[in-house]
Length: 252
Image 1 (cartoon, rainbow, N blue to C red):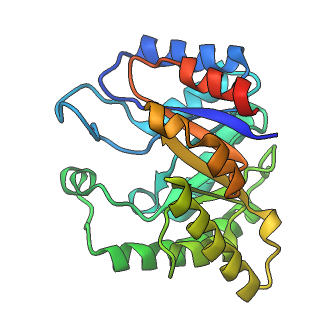
Image 2 (image 1 turned 90 degrees about the vertical axis):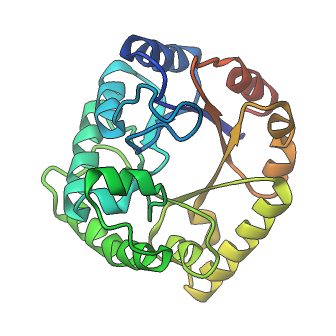
């Protein structure tokens, strides 16, 4: 069985529209619902309306009943690692134990520039992520009460030398993108890192994000053959859920 979820991108929409979308996705039986951790639109009008992701995730946790939830993915640079762990644990309790802790090294320079963080370099951001991951794991262990559910730690990104290594060391789930041949290669590299780390590769959930274009929806079976166990359909406003629901009927 392949899980199918949807990412609701919080730009160029109203609060009523995005809340209605996640309630509809949950009621329709999609396996997971996600948003992102940015402060400005990633495409289209750069000055369009936009909402902050962690606040949305907390509201989503309160509004939904069955779907798994998460940020795809949060940016390590934007919050102290211990604080992010505590925030996620709290949202996990609001959701009744349905929350992922998604995290990545960050990449969207405008977020950094306008909110006052040092953008640094790709290497420095990856080093910061490396240093944050054990702190996150330690804080989760120390929190009282602990998470209500499994609260899987998901790392997002496709870097073969560092990101996939950190996934093998620390993560319960991994997210990246297609096309299928690229995804198959990344999963092979992840398996190789697991072997080096003496980690059972089956312990890591393999998720992949695709958009709603016809060619990417057609990738589904090949992505599953390449190792994907969870496909997340990125759904821009106005939040048409039909592609994800049709995909769930096909592969779920």
